[in-house]
Amino acid sequence: MGLLIKALLGALVVVLIGILAKTKNYAIAGLIPLFPTFALLAHYIVASERGTEALRATIVFGMWSIIPYFLYLLSLWYFTGMMRLPLALAGAVACWGVSAWLLIFLWGRLH
Image (cartoon, rainbow, N blue to C red; front, top):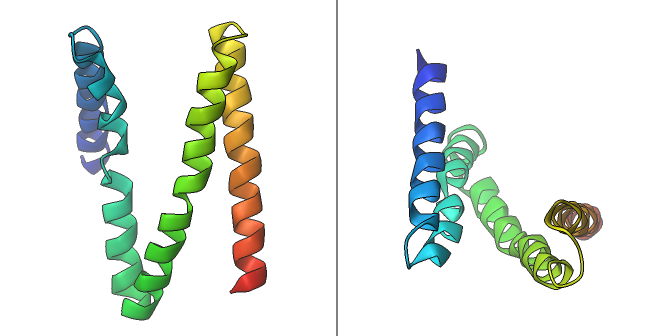
């Protein structure tokens, strides 16, 4: 039953994004996926299982994880000026992947 509720919530978010994309305020559709649904779950689980200190470390890592997302957006903006959309999206995801790997690697080295 829990899986069904999660699937329905996910479908609701997709519908909301689709509706907002058709309005004059279409850019707001880009804000909806950034609602911290999974962050709320992760933070609750980390705090419950590992304590406040681990939660605080997770929060700091989360702040640094904004960089790969920013690089995804920046590269997608750049690539859409020169490529077809599927290639631009794939290139932007690749940029995200490389920068996320680099972040994880550096975090592991420094902490």
